[in-house]
Image (cartoon, rainbow, N blue to C red; front, top):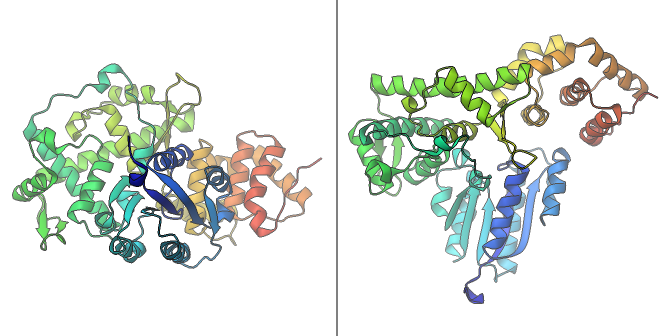
Length: 444
């Protein structure tokens, strides 16, 4: 039994603008933190005007919500850093700080905590985490590790296929190349330790021991000897990079992996345009019938492949509401794709005076599409459908409002298109309009 002296006293500081996931993930993460010790303070920092539902959920989980209305870059970071330093000064009994962020602005804070002799538990999305941060942590957790475990679609999907160690090594090396590209694209440097976190996050079945390596660094050394990567600089500041010349075989394998993930996303979106979303089982059957060979791209289980696609933000696996039902799979739209869609359609669908929404609202539109099980094609249909436009214009007329901004307009059209009652439509849209001082009402 653990003695009281060894139970850590913890304070949680959550940079919500940097790290978020599903409500179930937030709940599980918070429960695990509380199970690990005594939580004396828990703060969550964000512009809560744009996160009202999440604000209610986190408040119910025991977080003090620190509102940051300032739109300047890093406003939340500065406020959170001030709270951490104030806590460090006034609460010496706190022995472990839980920082939920991947922002590189907290490197100095993390270093200060380390020098002060307290533990740091860092939780983040490793793909967009500053490279040095995990190295400063006493404990590191991938935010996705708090998601519910994904059951096998069929019993046989739990069985690993038999592949030679040589084949596994070369496929893993191609995955390592992809990880280096992804980290570099985010503006971070692929340090050896950070790359390992991202590798295991993007590829859940990666296991260096299964390939005959005694540890991660041995796998990295082998990948360099095989000319898949190069190492630059001395430890502990060694950076992984791609060689100037990549073998044709590596390029071919990398292309096959990219095509497989794109195919999965395409099939998922096509289905939602026509019918209810695929269940996980239906998706597995569909992909097999359409000739997708998972072993060829290095995945020995279907569940690992779809989890990897989810980590790449291509799809989202939604847990069933009823016990015994299968999870469903939905397409995910990233900011770049939504922005491209708006740039192409904004004048035609929203009017010549309307600009493409800012990034924050593009993200909210993507989240709305996900929550309402809607595709971009469906959104376009709702914005042009006579029935939907008529209901929308009636609401604006009775509310004496000439127009709504693109996000709120998109939300209204989706909800009307999904045939929600006017009262339900108004309630949801008014929540998003409240910061603007606008309020809609239903026609009598």
